[in-house]
Length: 157
Image (cartoon, rainbow, N blue to C red; front, top):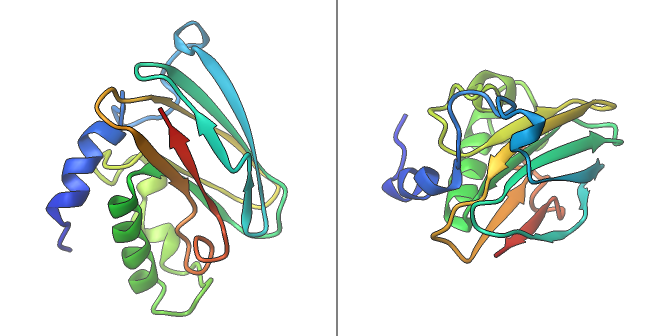
């Protein structure tokens, strides 16, 4: 598999304190918790404001009927990931057959973009430290068809 340099470059700062697990930080290390609701093709809130260096625990509740992912990265990295997800699904829209095989949600994708996968009815957390060298990032679900239906939002600094 070929990974573009833009994904690798953006990943180094988007990953924050990623060391293979997104929940290693203790509650004392977390500056604040932001709760998200994931429905069928939407996130609430639709955008957030963060401060560089702030450690945030995202709590994502999937109230929808579909599996979703929550991925943090810049627009170029999100687009690269969407293309990979589309190719893995064989171009079959919301087919999840290829999705589970990429293991990005388990931190086995080289720590390139912080992410978790949330099954229908599940609640999961992701701990992330905001980088200091960017003005904005996105959070998104890149399962085929989900981003295009509105499952993304802005992280503003």
